[in-house]
Length: 615
Image 1 (spheres, rainbow, N blue to C red):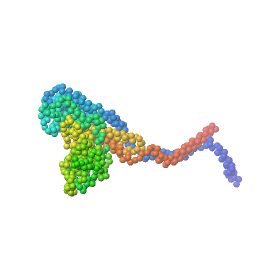
Image 2 (image 1 turned 90 degrees about the vertical axis):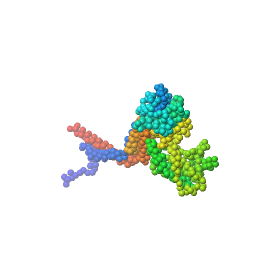
Image 3 (image 1 turned 135 degrees about the vertical axis):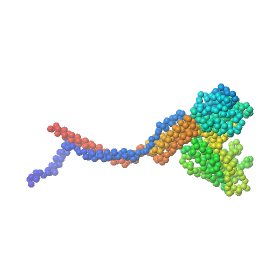
Image 4 (image 1 turned 30 degrees about the vertical axis):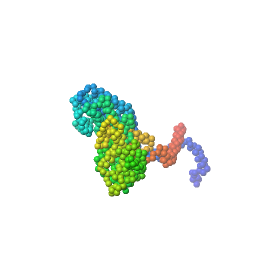
């Protein structure tokens, strides 16, 4: 029992005293290396959090397709400092006996100077610019003398192709004759080597003609028949070139902004022509129309001619119970009910005229309304009085950017004939053709042209030939040039707005489709500029329309419009409450364990140093 008591543990009091002595030596020395298991476990938890961070950022990142910001800025600078001016070549041909060597040079210099004065120093959007080419050819039948002002052209005049005797034919025959001469043997329109279409004025000097006739054809030429002084000839030729062939019948001073700025074409490059026949009161009479047949004859060529400007679709409808909103009064002098221009803003009855029924005009398409209004018996005949007190010959009016209205009075407006129309009637083909002619004239005005140049105080021009397409070749060239310029500027403005929007919102989603649309828009804009420099007007207008439509599609993409974007601060405010508490405790634990390990290792190193000195 004594041996067992010697080996027994010390009493509790003694053990506590020994532990106190050892506790005083613990902060400075330790005889064993500190373990790394706790340090490894702590840092493994921290590394697991850090390794998951890239996956978290990838799962919450915003997809942003790269946009060509530099290309957009470069296109904007090009359009700002070098606005597109499509090249044009103007040629005057004098048919006269005897060739004068100095006459061509003298006339070329005079015409170019007068055209420069009329065009002015300001460049209109889509105009011919200041560098247009002017050439003069004197054709005596056997010999031709030309002066091109130092700018050689590839579209040469065929000497002796037109004789002075041809001026006695009718204007349409002369127009086709000149067109065949301009096209040449191949039958294709000649495009000048320097770029642009060639516009020609042929002067047929005849002594036996009493009056001077100036006729503007439906193609790209005009002609003057008669004896005119050289000064008057130069004035007439330069006026035809600048006012009509260059500016579409408008004076040069009013063309700074161009025709294309106020043309009713949708942002997507489409236009819907909606034709409606309104029967104000079916209890009096009901009218229908053969729209499809007349549309194929008169409207289809117009839509085809305007294809480079807009994708045009046509629709029609017949409505009933559609009274007008404005009032009219009876006038004994004219024998009808009169409404004046001040009543036009109240003519359209928005509550009863359900015109916007097109399913093809969804989105950003533009709808132009063309209405045939058949008044009721209590206001028939209904007549439009002009500001000068006269009655309108067409009995129609237009509303800019909306459309046009034609008031058609039935041939019988007396009470005795009302019962004859209750079963329904059809508009006579002759009347329907006249109505469609008015609609085409209204469409011309909506597109920035004049319905009738002779009515616009024109005194020097004797006649303007009409085209079966509603627009002559030189008018289409004017529209193509101005639309090409306007669409390019609109495209750039839209792309710049999109670029600023994307750069201002770092958390904004930019789909790959948007990036492709911006890329294709820039490519189409570059193609439009190239076609413009080459003078290919229709191709330039078509490409610019595509560029504008693609830019609009990119800006109004559904992925942009349907999402609310927040700042980076809001992004952190959402996820910090979930991850901050846990990650903070893990980080603090790792720091605390690292400090503990360094402290314990320092103790062991001090112990090892003591052992080395003692030995």
